[in-house]
Length: 324
Image 1 (tube, rainbow, N blue to C red):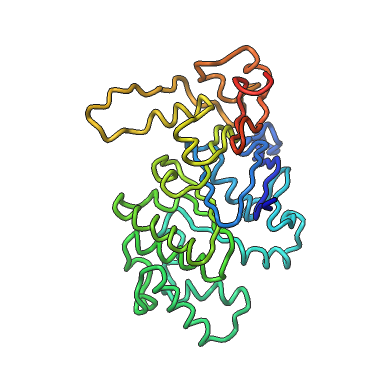
Image 2 (image 1 turned 120 degrees about the vertical axis):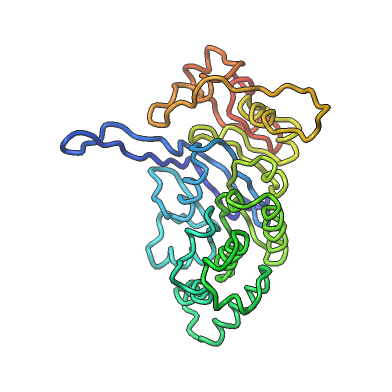
């Protein structure tokens, strides 16, 4: 049986809401609410959903940039939430992050060489000559030139800056990269170049990706499996092609039907979602999507559906399937 590189079990992240003169807790925002999934070596898992669904928060929780409220995160069968700061530093060498904004994520006061050198220094590469050679090789690997090492971030285009961000993530030879909407701030033509670069790097360095995005077309292009999130919950998870060809959850169907089809003769109607997204500080009882679902049943309003495997490799949280 193939063991997962990363395993997430019933992870939660609740942010407290404070009020009054004494700043007492008066509520909480359920940004991530009992999410479970696994990521296998060499694959790309896409996470999609509307803004505010919790997908970026999951990325930060996996790296312990934020501490989870509850649940378990295991990387190579190690519980990363139980690690000491010293051991966590070693694990972080294996898990890196590519940020959404390719300009804000780079220090504007540092040249590219110093930006790429910093992770090597942090993780104990003391030989300056070795550090410089690794930097130059990595610049060429991501499609830049060696002389770019002497430039500042503002001297590059958006696509070039994102390449620098990707190079920085690769400097420690990680096994897992979490890409948090890495192409959403780029022009469409540049997006395809960066996506192709990520796929080439995955093959060259045997990388595993968690690819966070809201663009369903981008996710289909790069992902092996896709997880769909709604209001902090995972509602569907399956192979990329199966999700696009045979979506099960009503929310997934609505998302896919809203993707524009580049065919003027296509007359298919999209399923327009009605109503507002509920507040994460006061989510609906039962299924979080029932307030906007055309197939809502009475049980949906009172009982939260179990995230279960309906067919081999296809998980969904919906009362339309399973024992309900």
